[in-house]
Length: 436
Image 1: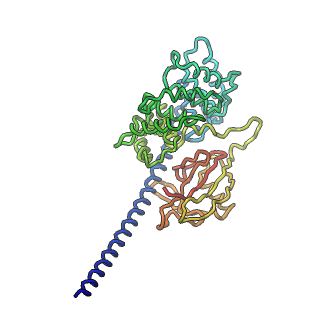
Image 2 (image 1 turned 120 degrees about the horizontal axis):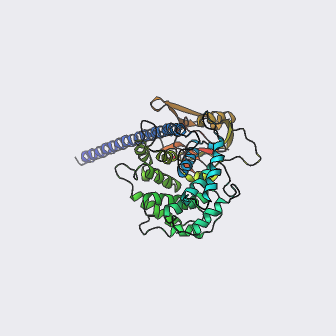
């Protein structure tokens, strides 16, 4: 009977072990299936976001005045910057049936001329927006109409605070504009902004905190501990139910700040933030007022003000066929130990301006067989997603690595699908096989 008891216990132990293994396997399969479904749900949101960008871009262009602008000096600058960041549109090179691109030169000449009249009422923050928008349309800011606008902004920052220029938001915006214009300024101007931070990590409110973080992330030599404290303060203001940071304008700025610091996306539920932001879209395909629409556009496209710092412009005396653009495209592997491969050599491919990433990928696979890929079409959101590159699949069940498209200039993931993302000239892009 003792032997029978031992045999019974052994059989029982084996049965329990088998059941445990089966349950663990089912759990793992369910987890992978859930992770896979979540991955494509996220992609669907990104595609909807890109489609909203296209609609809002059309809205802004259709509401341009016959004279060329949209309203105030600051508003015009915001829209010009927004269109360049979100849609790659340089308003200095656009001609339509009703508005000539010549208006840009005439407009900025008038604005700068008025800014330095004795009776000028232009705020310093508005001039900062002008400098940022000049950068967006590839105009010089250190010698515009014989005026060094960068130096003027430096003088204002050195004299802060002063009447009509005594708020950290205006200071942050001005410092950011200088940085984006690649101007040289003294480190004390960075220190001055850092010293404005409150003990709770905020710079007065969410808008100002986001703008301060953007300015400090752009500037060289900023105190990373101060930025990190600001990020934590910003995250503490995020709604636990809607995941928003306030209205559409405030949420859009917060998104830019978090993206600029490369805060891990799951930490602040970027996808749910976008879902909430998309709810602000009106039947006119705007996000309320023109300024709100201009503010939201870059965030929907995962673009940030800091992208202006390295924006591509024609060199003086150079020539470029604006109808053809060139990108550098790379495939890399970061899924060890499942995939142990050396990164592929970059390929340089060209196509017409406005072509999707899918078009460039088709050109690349003709140059190098390692760049061959396969896609799946999703009718529900009218887009393709990458399933395999170099015969390595996102659907493999023995690991949780997927293909992600990244901007190598900023190290930011590009969440738009290859059908909807349209690279800019001289873009450096990579498809990376890694964990989510």
